[in-house]
Image (tube, rainbow, N blue to C red):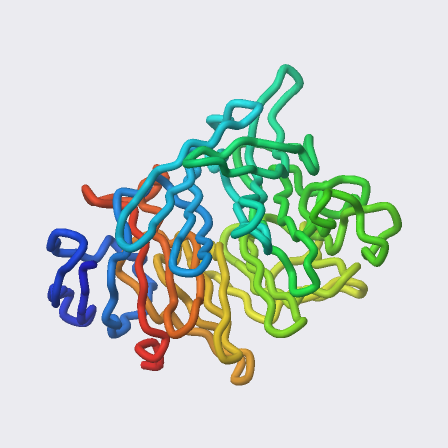
Length: 360
């Protein structure tokens, strides 16, 4: 792996060691003018040449990273294997569409199953669906559809999948660029959905005979639990990005309110970006702090729940899509090959950094 130690104040990156990957000089990507200047921690590149990676998962010492272009990349002991995913429908080509959310079944070592969220087209339009994938050898196959025909558009797919501490599958959906759908409880758009792993509706869901867990969302792309408390990241309109504490049955306001605006019966966020744009996506947690990968923000951003403060802790690597915490390390993927970044010849990359190096 390539160890990287960079001091962003002087825009100099020093290479400190190499084992499984050939030595390379990682230069900072162009950053936003309002991006804070931070001291870069020492980092390692675990894998490179990924194609628009979207979700990180890990079992034992093996990573599985979904690529929006339609593959799952297995990374084991420094070796990469790009695994084929055979879906029943071809992936849609719209901006931000493709193979998005991906999460391993809790019993994956035994049953070799996972759950995925992808965008497709048929003669009636463009949709997202949630499916079960089965791994055999080095090939994944769509085995079963759990939820289908979630209306889609060029943008605002949502797409994050996570399994909660009680064993239910949570799904984020975007408003498909039709904001009024977020307030419509009969629509699956602009929601956080919750289902049993067999695709059925949990008896204790927020609304009877409905997958809807919370509503009034614009484009939520990250989920994480701190204990039993669920937090979500969400893209706002022209900045006003949000980090929300999600409560069952609650209305998070879009498109009626955003940012710090308030209205009776609607929730306001714990954190919001104001006039700055973060475009937060995947989330993770450690020691009472939330970490979010940000796309336009070009950073891993830390949210301290106790102090109610936020700061970027990693910058200079371009667009970042997902983040994952395991043991003493924080892992994250860049997203510079998504058509909006400035990729180098080895992008995109899976990185890791010691959590203790983020204390600053």
